[in-house]
Image: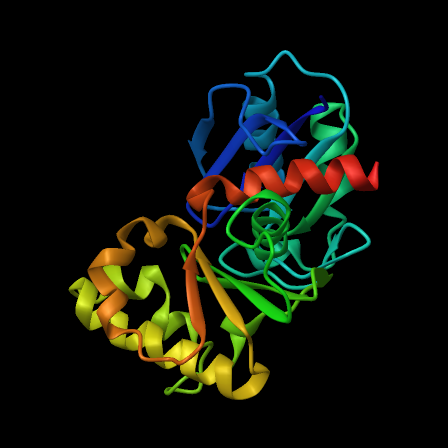
Length: 247
């Protein structure tokens, strides 16, 4: 059994746990802290350092991050301070904690977890993992192979801004929408994705997936929809698996 520390940096919270990468099970208590309101590299790396200190752990850490990640560097900054653009996230976190880091896009990590031992097991063709958190993340897989950094939540929406600002969970909260009202917005997002990508399956994860029963009747897209097995832990698990594979 390989036990790897997985960390999920989100727009509102940072979560971590030890993961059995073979089974996908958490082998420790999951710890969570708030993402700093001013989410600069300095502040977030300090928060990650304090979170890592909760674990008696040495070795490579896996971390998923709300950005397009290329060779450990953030190329975008979704729901996090714009100062992260062009920042080598793996190096910043490694310097803060003393651990080597493998960093990848958050929705890609969630998809890795679900495809290996969750709702994606046995699904062929094009599978799109959709994480419904502060914004909307997407991880795209074709016949089980990840196509990294496909940020479909950043497609233009009805108002010309990123569609996640219209259909993400933050939009539901800001606009005080009932789940069925918000479900119509989320269905609009899925319909746009289906038109562009023609997926065979959607897997819905992230915090809002726990309320799937509250909005499922509003989802009219013909693509088969699955609820993620690991829900809000998928990013932690997938990050740990990626760290094991990439270390």
